[in-house]
Image 1: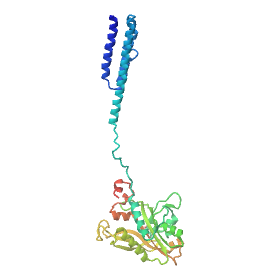
Image 2 (image 1 turned 90 degrees about the horizontal axis):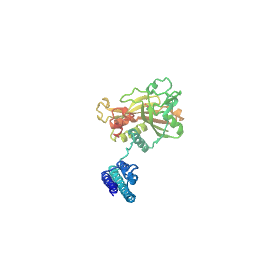
Image 3 (image 1 turned 60 degrees about the horizontal axis):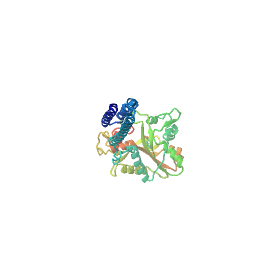
Image 4 (image 1 turned 45 degrees about the vertical axis):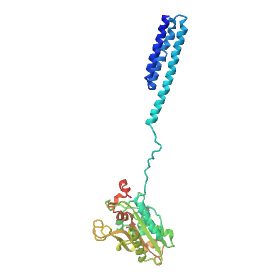
Length: 347
Ligand code: PHE
């Protein structure tokens, strides 16, 4: 009898101890250890079965039964505890990684048009309203179109004005101005009258400084027809300046020289920083140059397929960075292609 109470007492205190410990556990690892300790192969509860031999024959079933009850009870409690531990871990997780679907989304950064694209479009728009079409010509040009056909033969001193980048292929260069497009469009539209603008990037071999870049945009203006006069040119360019800078802007055309126009001129607009009085922006002149222009040279007309005895025309080349610089008071041309967002985001 005493042996029976001995084993049962042991089991009872074991159960008490196990339950007490279990109550204090709060994670899966600890529960796993607890399982090994109290219900594993070498755990005491399991050892009791081996020790049944110590008890008398009659007592053995009772002790065995009791040991089984203890084992079942502990297992049940373990699985319950495991469930609560898992649940609270899940809750903690949900709480710490809470996702508020009602928060406003993060805006992806939006791009914008480059200032020169915007200005170019504005210029195209102004000329479109005067009946001009856009004619696209190539940026990689031949020496022939960039110089020869524009009345600038090899070794002509005027070539110094348009030093360029040469490719390794002979006669293939980057265009120094949009003027080669004059001959290209004449050959395309010949013998019809022409009223086109040719926008695009040009390249020059330059020493870069605040007003010189190795790349820049130009818009070429070309009109060819019968009875086209200098007055037509002046009227068109003045109208452009008024639309670009305001209807009261004053302009002037000074005589100049280009091998592909005769006579040639350069158009200035009144400096709107000082209003013509002279300041640092216009270097004291009161005027700012925005374009070169002139009546298309007979040689160029002929190269385009038009008889200079019958046809005449005018052309102009507008410096687009120059036009934006004046309009937005940008003091360094290198800003345009420097890719600095602090500059670009202002427009
Ligand atoms: N192509 C000239 C330049 O780049 C500008 C120009 C164009 C002058 C058309 C006259 C006529 O300097």
